[in-house]
Length: 460
Image (cartoon, rainbow, N blue to C red):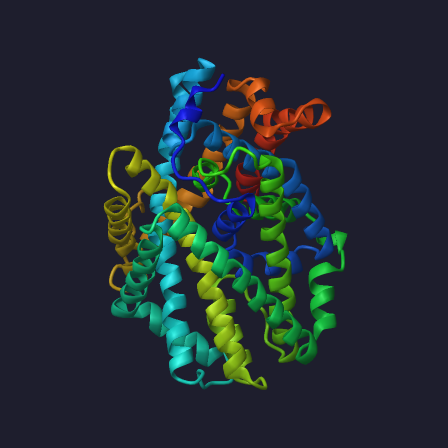
């Protein structure tokens, strides 16, 4: 018997609302500027197949575990892990998961907000100026460099973005998270699909299809497999703690397996549609697609300058990118707010405290592109001599803490909790339960260690 169900707080109205909120957290800038490029560079359809296998083999099992822990504990990630540890009479060691579920999203939103602030700056300037003149990527690269070199512009974008995140999250679970996600997630998909349709008509759609989907198994190296597994892990938000926090709001009647699968499907389909929207345009104009910020701030603006209705399409594109960034920001900060609420802080001041603290930490990341660009805090550590403050934060979260917490969650759910927990919360039995238990105990931990730690070490 689970006594934690008595601690029920706010809940989402339906499973669909959970999918909107959770997929909003998962779908972010990486879906737009990282996944399509990785797929094209690492064998197209071959990469996509490995990615889908990674999602199924260790992404979905950990997603289900996070949601299960959150709903069973009915509280912040820290409270949920502690409650389940006590219920299972497991070691107090596992409580470190709860602390990581506060630290990771707090630091993560701090530097993610800086990057999202670039989107705020570009979107505002593009729309207000009637488009950005300049037909070559070199011109737009210079504009992007000017943005990074300006402390005022970077901090202003960071501030505006964090303010909007706080404004939405402070309204609560139903009036803030749920209403916001149900409004903007359909709009996000509608904009991306419309852009893909436009690209299929005006761009080189055949080249994009070949780039993304034609399987080239000669490019499917160990590095490509590691990249596919890593993208599956990070894109789904595994280890962040947000899915655990949202799990606490999931109604008991909703299937955890079904909700988790829907989130994974939404995240993956959005990334694929993004590739079909972006690459036909860049290929048709002879512009090399770039991975990372260069795609959004250099390649695409250069393409819009040479397209029919470029201002309209460009405006829609930057609005789309902004929405993707905002939904991720809102979802990322929620575990921190939930933790503060559990400590007795009311929702509004808890959100302001979390947002203000993350904004302050983010200043270090913002200034690392300009006035603190020469600062190397960890230069005395081998391999860190060239890492800026932003690079250090990104490395600590993406390369160390996220994989570590994902690994701990898998081990906790698979080994510290009995099969009874899974049977009661997942509503599964027989072959399905055995498959999940095997995946969460063996496949997911091995996949995380091999793809996210061993592969980079071997490359070095």
